[in-house]
Length: 159
Image 1 (tube, one colour):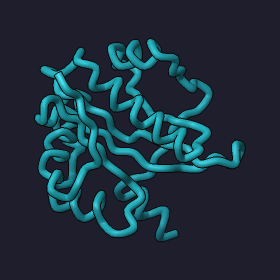
Image 2 (image 1 turned 45 degrees about the vertical axis):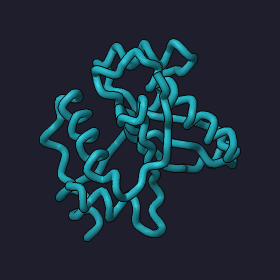
Image 3 (image 1 turned 90 degrees about the horizontal axis):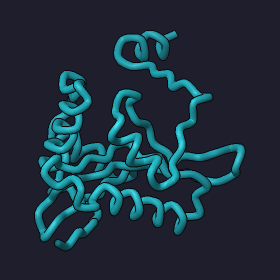
Image 4 (image 1 turned 90 degrees about the vertical axis):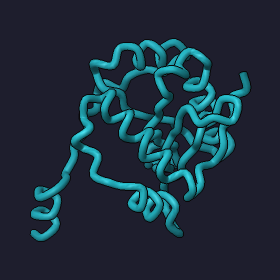
């Protein structure tokens, strides 16, 4: 077994969309996926894009992906790395791919001088929570995430 992690390229847009859809199905939110391969290509790989992708392979076959971006902590005065998505195909779980992706991102965060590496997990996803806590990640229960989207975003922006 040879786990390899590489930067995603525009040629990976279809693959990334498949992984996004698989993740959305697992999270019981397939109806939330509104993009297509062209949307992935045009946003993730556009000049000036602030998001980045990784592809995880096992013996040359893609088995997972991650999408991340850098944010900023005013309190630390440092950038942070935020993991938007992490997914490993069910048949490839327990091979160490998820941990390899997370370690790769942690190493990237350290190399870039980030003060934090953060992500969100659904409160019912006990396998993921147990996995994250197994290597020292801890929930931040004092914060609640808010979101403006769709018509509410448009209405608020319009004043």
